[in-house]
Image (cartoon, rainbow, N blue to C red; front, side):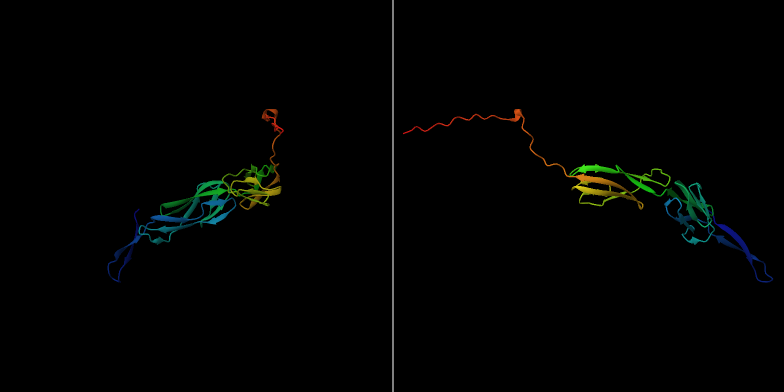
Length: 220
């Protein structure tokens, strides 16, 4: 990029003016700051630092824009407002140079539910609970982090990351799923597994043993 030049004249009274050349540094690069993810309705301030080829900071006007204004808009000072779920580019431009940040706008979690909502297992058995995360419009949201906990871990334990429940002792436990501050629950009833007993022998399983008669001792 070429630098701009301007001429001015400085001369003493009665002398011939000598043109002076002033070099204006061109914008070589732009460093941007700002979040890469926002929830719908969030507002965030983006920033831009302009530098010349030597890395010196420049004070120049910056023009801001959003490639998809239905997703997010940006004001003249770099203030971004997230409007709807999607992806847009927030662009800062100055002196013929531009830089952008990719912004993902996501819908916040409004509801969490678990399936099955109620179930029964015996001690030693497991059941997989499946979470469903939705926004305020009822749309299913994917890729959200869900954590699990049990109200009675001595009755039923649950994996904090997978939602796999294990029955430990007779009783009732509430399994809680949490995502972005929203929760959903499921009730797990645990019953004692029956004791293992020997089954009744069938005729084919009975073995007959031949017993030889005892010999009597000869009487003296």
